[in-house]
Length: 405
Ligand code: SAH
Image (tube, rainbow, N blue to C red; front, side, top):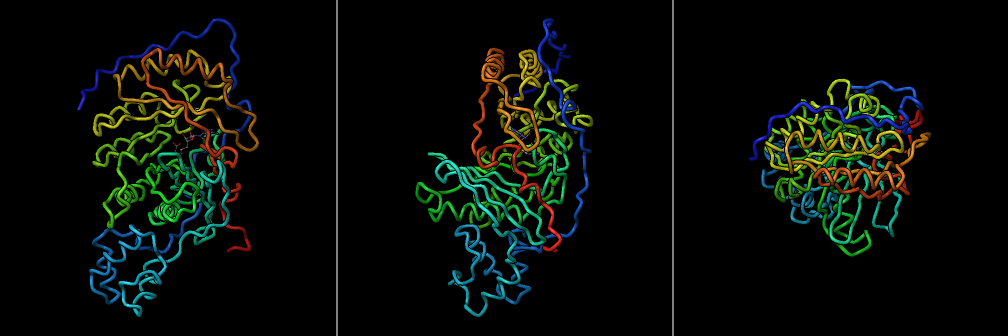
């Protein structure tokens, strides 16, 4: 493992002397508070996918069946994505419905799907058992497919440029509620429902609704099940699983000890505490230096290059000096450990902020690269169906309507 260089004190880059346009989040919105605890309690019913392989065997035994039935059920679920007992033909017909009722409660109901890119981008709005709503987005590319999943209904992190952040946190999802998003995506790819012929899911990104590091234990369980070999899990490669965080530094450091080499993405959005505390309010608790140190520690423990997400917002965080300062802070922690993903801001309801102009974006990217930082602009797939980064809002309506209760 490469040894981290000593972290030098980074002097702030010189501020430009000529006047540059500079807008602040507070110019437009009154900040909404950070919210650590969910508004709703109430757990989803326990599901087969919530259980470890041992717990699955114990659960079928308790229902009066031989433990090997657990492996048969796991094969139906993780290899064939089949929860309909009619398809479980290796299990005695008389036993099927009872097992399904006890272990496979329906957790997700698709209430609306929107498609873009000739059907290869699909955003699904799911209704959960308590009528809470979340979304996931499936993106098929010529050579791979990626599912963006939600780990919470809403989000408590209050980032003013993110539609989900403006909703507040309704509740955490259970492991099975998250894994069901994955199973249903796998099923729609396997059946050839998505144009391009049947295929498999390659990547899962925790970049939908919610802050995954604020639902830590559940997200770890999900990651283990995603990465476990078929039929104990979905058999994804850990490196193809990306956990994105606003920068909950203690959780990032804990993640480094789990021995799960997932890709870590850090939503930075500003290299200076002054602006970042307004764009990503949790920065008042974990500063830019603290989160960058935690990100570097993750690289040291996992050997996985960390991604830095940086939504480019016109005249807010897209100044050349900020690109230089970002590069300086990253390089102060070593070379080759990090990759920057600028994301042109996606529009969100009620916001007047816009994506950086293309000359500013080019300049920002060029300055990072000139400083030796690997940089790739992220595409804005799904923005026409409000399915791109920061746009998931479940129609702004996560909590049940009165008539649903
Ligand atoms: N809460 C986690 C997971 C969400 S990932 C996190 O913040 O990392 C969603 C990514 O899209 C984050 O990097 C988020 O900061 C970014 N994002 C939010 N709103 C956006 C917008 N309007 N345009 C572009 N990116 C946005």
